[in-house]
Length: 328
Image 1 (cartoon, rainbow, N blue to C red):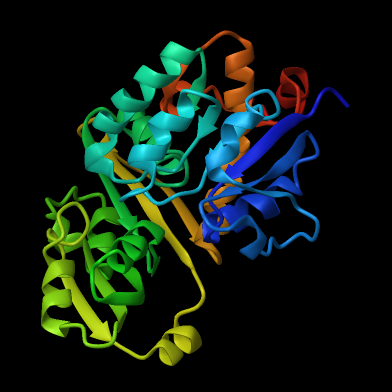
Image 2: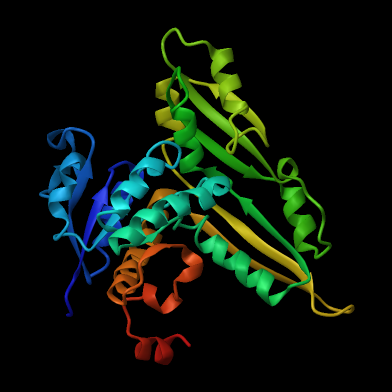
């Protein structure tokens, strides 16, 4: 086998654990270790013997890591870590605050360009794979409308956001698509739907002792970019109930492009995902794009890039000739 791609993980929550599992399924990759802000000795990786280092010491690994996969949260972690680490390593991250992507791209791009590094941002299934399918739909059916539905499932980014609210010790958020809205779109009628009409959001929250429930609820439902544009319900539950009833992390969704190619013919294109584990699937996407980040950097391409900038063949462990033979 050719030289293996050396991979590091920055952050070890649900997404970091998913990346660890995904790396084991990619024989062209070598797992260098986990980098954490916690005390390294306090971490218990899923794979015994996996090296764990302090994130503060990551500068010592500049020549030992080909691609660093960033597994921090989009609300508070990645806005700082993304640009900082792209100045030292080729990186891949799953920044998913859609409204802030242009600003985040610019910040990461400035650092990566200056260092000659390649940084793939906002990689996952949305943004990421869903983004590509939105692009395909609009390009192929220029006259039409694109609709994205998420859920039912646990959103990692939104769950992380509610856990950052003062007075919250734990919590998860479910995104629920409207069945009526989905059927209207699938009919090809191109309905006009507001953000609020397409989804609702449901939060299950464990309060800290002495916290003001009303203040916590208000902070959640008015949070810009996350909940303010949706009908959001907040349930306060015990930690025991959260662990018993809300410990799994399913998700999924649909991208639907509804359009016409002539006055007589309507066309509907649909791409869907049904996931048992949101973080494990997102991690698998990140690992595939880590391969692409390495190859792009080897080609001399630096700076920030998105899923739109990566040719599909760069994601595969297979050669271009094999892909033409087997998949084309």
